[in-house]
Amino acid sequence: AYIWSNGTTTSSTSVTASGSYTVTVTNTEGCNDAESMPVTVNPLPTAMITPNGPTTFCQGGSVMLTASGGTGYHWSNGATTSAITVTSGGNYAVTVTNAAGCNDTESIPVTVNPLPTAVITPNGPTTFCQGGSVMLTASGGTGYLWSNTATTVSISVTSGGNYAVTVTNTEGCNDAESIPVTVKTLPTLSLIHI
Image (cartoon, rainbow, N blue to C red):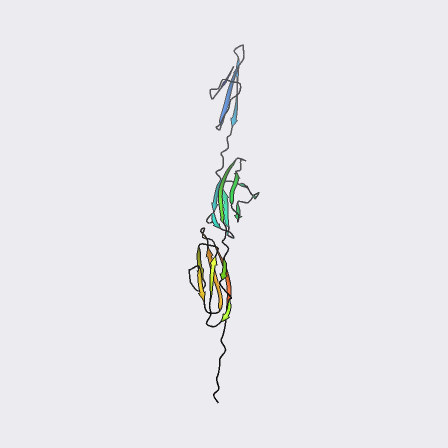
């Protein structure tokens, strides 16, 4: 017969906490013997991921993810450093290991929003004589800011120069495009009276 210090009466017992576990064994003649064994249950680490900024950003941006809670780190992208710099969207997980070899896993989603594509379309030639004009129309987003401070989709241009527009999409990401406009000066006509 078997009697464990935790009350189990089978030949084996399952333990989940640290401590010294004793079993008393009794044979058919009624004689018994006792044996003790210490058990140490090491605590799990607590994996944490801390971003150094927003985890939703526009294409071309990045965020640094720093793991803590242990002494060893293994990221889902293969990195083994405590911090990684992320430029692509996805779910980033880290497994944190402590000095006892126990581990815990944490993950964080990262969203990378696409950039719009700014396009400027003129309604005619962008080189014309003084007194003429051209309409420039932007497309590719939901918000527009021209270099002349206009916020309309289209602007009418009568002066030469480089006209740029910043196009913003619904995610708040932007792209810029520019177009040169050339205005030719009119000749000066002089009449000589004879």
